[in-house]
Image (cartoon, rainbow, N blue to C red; front, side, top):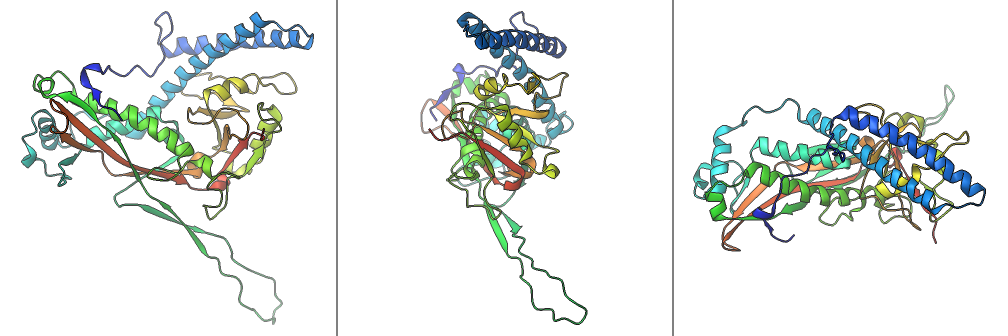
Length: 414
């Protein structure tokens, strides 16, 4: 990652989208969302009628796409608010002051001057790296939850060792029916499979001049938090979906039938429905995807797909002319597809030949994120004078937890 100069940084944009007239009230945005959806349904229905008559209207089609895009923007604003609520619930009550005031003060002073190492005795390392104070780490984690879709829906576990292993019962127990005096020969004994979740290391490396630090021109907590948030969330988003497992998490799509890690899990690959087309998804295929998941696992299931795929799916109707997609109707409620929640995930692939653009299932049962305790920061004033670099690292792992809880839709080959 290239050096990021402090004087080029801006505060992160609000998560709740702002309309053209500046309105950010959730009720106002929800009302706009409902009105836009009604306009979309009207215009799209007219477009379809014209197409059936062989009267393709390019202007009408462009209008539908503009409304579709606006609908996506409004729904994204509502989803962002819901993510903020999730992050607050994860972090619990707000911290009114530093959990460890003495360490926090020393840590901040070390950032400014670099001359108080002796006061930093928590998590010290020979190379000069120090664990961020608890409240800083909590702030960063909360921000990651707000903008990382997989962290909102998957299981997470914090570990204090180099890795985490989970043992799976392969369910090979044998049994049989016998008479009262019949012999009882030995039956099969189940064996166990092991999945190893090894954290990789993710980093950010922003820089500021010593003069800027001396003059207190920056809120270091907000600055580091924003840098870590942006870089970590981007890298995590890619890895949790399609990571190859080399120094990074293993993405769940790599465990789908036909993918690179289809045979890696003791329970096998994620079952997959193959679409008839390489470029189009039908409502019937989405229904097949839903009902391929056992009912016992469907209670907490949801769809995941990217913005481009969602724009396609938003146009699908059932046999009675009802749209399969529905927007949020109140704050905190997600958009739905076939009455199941939808999580928009930028790292999911587009609809294309051989791609896996849509996934469905209970991601808390299906995928595990492993966090190695603590964010570590190394203050480096020597490498690139006159800049002081703040090399910030966190060890994160992830992998498939239970393939039976997930399903994927694969497009036909070209």
